[in-house]
Length: 234
Image (cartoon, rainbow, N blue to C red; front, side, top):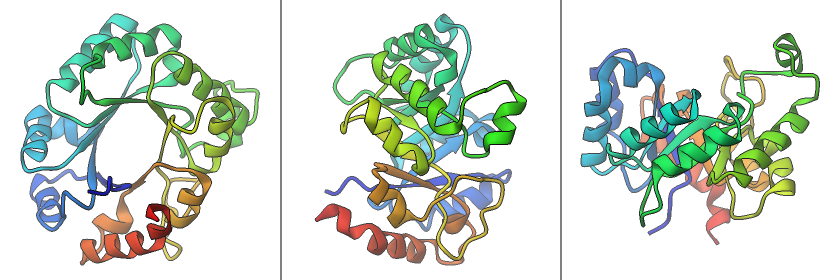
């Protein structure tokens, strides 16, 4: 079975609308991402239900706290049966190592990824919070930090996958949000890319939200994306 590269981002305040989308999706052809809003509203039981019906779930809570708290949070996340969990690389080496301890070393354990620079940032917004270097430099530094301290990969813009590869390895995963079809509105993300361009750039998994969730025929959009990136399976 092909490991689908498509991760559908669930962003709903109404659980019935979420299930309206989920009921139309094929767990063999996409994974699901549950972020802070839905996890806060609907809790662990929502994630467990998605796992029970066959979806691989990326729990996108971006843990960033003292190492011991992050370790315990990752342990709790793993108990839900998730496929992937993430932390902020800005938490530092000790925190990333603690997260790695939290996910464990057993076969089939969840993947641990570290967020580098959010795709909502550009150079000016980073400067506002004290980052003096450009985005690629910061992503390279944080990606190397994650790689050296036990993460399986990073969450970054597809624009920065190249610099991640320069300082890590081809096996180190790149999970890329900010994916938009060519016809889509970029909305609140600045460093965006189409699915095909992202895969060419080296992305392993594509996080796609509105392009799929706001479509009347979400599986048709997934099929369109599959065709666009099908060269990567050859």
